[in-house]
Length: 324
Ligand code: UDP
Ligand code: MG
Image 1 (cartoon, rainbow, N blue to C red):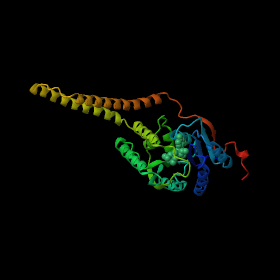
Image 2: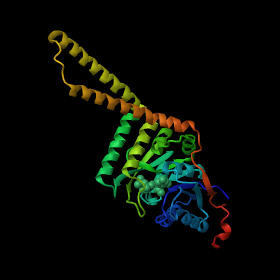
Image 3: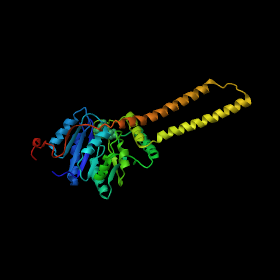
Image 4: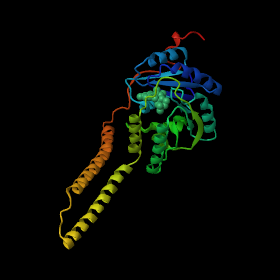
């Protein structure tokens, strides 16, 4: 059995409603391309029937590979697991299971990459089914990352939906950090890249696993794994307050010498104490965010554990398949 040229990697968490539809839509698209291909479904510890749906698909279609993680590890790690198990010799396409990334865009990604690019990433031109708050917070985040990011620049309005050549994938797979902010890792790897605009559809079924708290945490992840900017902010904030305090002290001294001390109020003292306390706690918190990440990295645990892996084609399920 020859290795497939292209692997489609799909992380799935509680996607039993959409998976059959997803598979039904990806098959004609991939067949129209005409390359040997496989689709790697990663079950990220789903609590619903996702695993059963996947095994069903694998039994009926030899091009399905299946990676079942031992529990829910989160999308970024599930995606990594899928990429680790992708056998595509030419490259991989990363896509969400919920059909927000239309599989029909894949041929355009491949066409763009064929012009000599290692990475063709889909860039959202319209965000359907996302409210004003989600759009503005997302825009704000990208702007801040652009400021803080330094040499590594995140492309705007870009998710994980992309084609990656085998060599850029191999480069990406060398990055084994625990705190995986995939958008950032993709950007860090570099290689010639091109944007392909597309319209992001609303979720086909099931519900999003993201809420604002998770998105906030993802942004923290993005910032702390890509820049030490906030640590510098702490330094400058400290310097700035120290200088202000110095000026205030001088002014106090001069005033006391010239006019004596009329004992100015307790409230201003309280305000300064509380303000400085707040600044100190915040900066400690920032240091803590980094320290915690250092702690997690030093443990050197594997990124994920695989409960079961069925490679495509040679997955031992052939006997159960109805004769074609
Ligand atoms: N996902 C996953 N593990 C998780 C959460 C999500 O594998 O812990 C998958 C999910 O099944 C989907 C993709 O990641 O295929 C994107 O998730 P979702 O649609 O909830 O995110 P959104 O599109 O709202 O950013
Ligand atoms: Mg989605």
